[in-house]
Image (tube, rainbow, N blue to C red; front, side, top):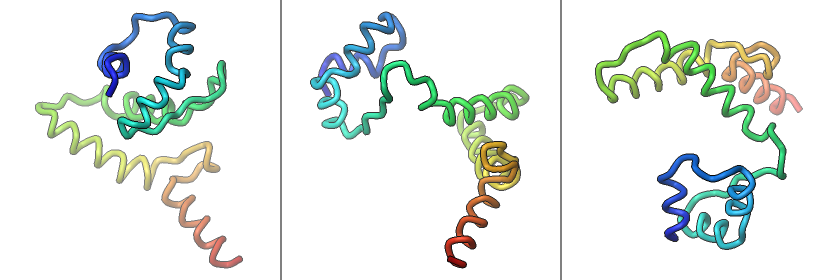
Length: 117
């Protein structure tokens, strides 16, 4: 991993958005990211929607679960969060983007629809 890329991975903030945009979209940077085994994921300049599903997930996790609990260890937190995701978020919690059904229900309907076609 190049020096600039490794510093970028380890550092948060610091540079203005404009200089970051130029740096992160340069061929040298993208080649370094790919060589390190990462997938480059950038949208067009100024497109704020590409990260919306991820931001929504993190917001739900924090607001609905993490902020209401205290964990004694990282291991306890990891196990509890994995359970929340697998049991509640994926199987029970309704998602407005999926027609107010849980992802597992939505996926089941899609499979049945494909089998029927």
